[in-house]
Amino acid sequence: MAEPRDPRQRQSDPSLGGRRREAARSSVNVAELERQVGSLALSQVEGAGALAMMRALVWQGILARLGYAVPLVVLHDLGCMIVGLGAPGSVPRGIAEPELCEAWRQLLVEIAESDLVRAQAGWKHRDPMVGVVLARILAGVVPQLPDDIRVLRPIELPVDAAHYARIEPSTAFTRYDQRQALAWLSTLTTHRLLPLLSVEQIDVDALRLFGLFRGGPGEAAAGVDLADLYNVMVSPALADVIDFSMELLPSILEVKRDAGQQVFSIDGYASIERRGGIDDLELSQLALDEDIFEQKYVDDELFYFTHEKQMENEQRTHYVLVDGSASMRGVREVFARGLALALCKRLALLGEHVILRFFDSRLYEGVRVGAQGHAEVPYVLQFRAEHGRNYARVIRQLNAELSAPRRGDGKVLVYLLTHGECQLPESEVVTLAGRAPIYGVFILPSGPLDLGYLQHLYRVHVIDDNALSHGRRAQKARQIISDVEANYRGPQGSQPGASRPGGAKRKSNMSSGTGKPRPR
Image (cartoon, rainbow, N blue to C red):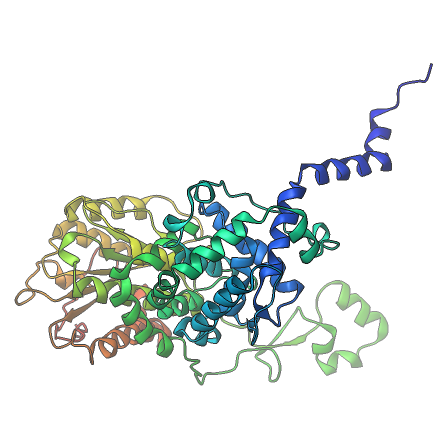
């Protein structure tokens, strides 16, 4: 009788690893995998290779998570044109009915003339965003599909290239039933105006806006839920905020060069110290006797030239608070949300910690701008609150949060984007001003701005009708951002982080553009 094997030997048994790999292969739906690859025999796009097929599989997985069961050939051909991986052929090809292949090719030719395809070089083709765009294009076609095709459940296929290395599309096409792919192509070509209209309705500026807030290499709006991305694509009410943001961001993202004193340790010395590197040793120390030199080296009594140390900025956290109540609808909402996006982006580019939050009758949890997850764009564009207004509760909640012990936040600055009727308890504003400088941006007040707490704010900006005109609103927003940037990049005495404790009063001159405190 054979002795039982040691479990430790069982773990290291190479044959066991082979059995696990075989089990993993068997868990893959091979029939569905080959059927989907076989649908590529109907493709009418030229110039696409193996990379295009693997990306199409990623797009298919994204649409599966959104609830769409779309054949691979549709996503492959549309996606390749959107991202510039291929173009419609000059003549129809494929092994299906020539009339269907020609109609599909003609539809792709018409889509290739759209602004979405022509502007494909202007936005970042990250796979989640491409998948959401494809879902937006195909959403109107789903109700027109035959009943048996429309109710099919989506199956997410593996994206490991090893599964597809030996599959030939033309052979797989004839081996498996291709009713799903043929039904989709027939429906798309019969109701050709539906995908064409959906393509024209996609806001290319929204894609560019997401590209400006993209994550790291290979990421597409990292940390953003696919449903949020999809809702941004299908909502026409967000166009004004997107347009205003695109007016601001190109200038905000410009590289600015500042002249300053060099503090890096490359030439010149600042002092003579007891510690340093051997290369910085004072030359007179080399004249000492060998025994004395060694003794002084052991006792740290040698003299070294030292360089000037690089000064590091103190860590700061910026709270950008945007009023999300019903009073901010219309032009107020457009200016506030566009300014919030641009301000957050600029501060994040400067290496600052930025937290973007909305409030109405409460202060909502926000998002960290510039962190690993880039969710600020859908957060700003989609946030809707219908809980009335209770600004006293909001500022008490903020004071309570800032009074709690925090790690790593450093100094705090608060930016308040609201309207002219934002009534806050003066005592709470004094308490908040003692903890953090407050920048107040009051948009479109109904009359002269008369709020009792304005004297406690570090800066006050009033945006009136003239400032909100289409030609001047971007200029006023840039002035506010420049004022914020100048206050902490200027001399140390003018930094907002140096505000006096106890809520010391700061009087403000208020105008239609910006207001600055008078000197005491």
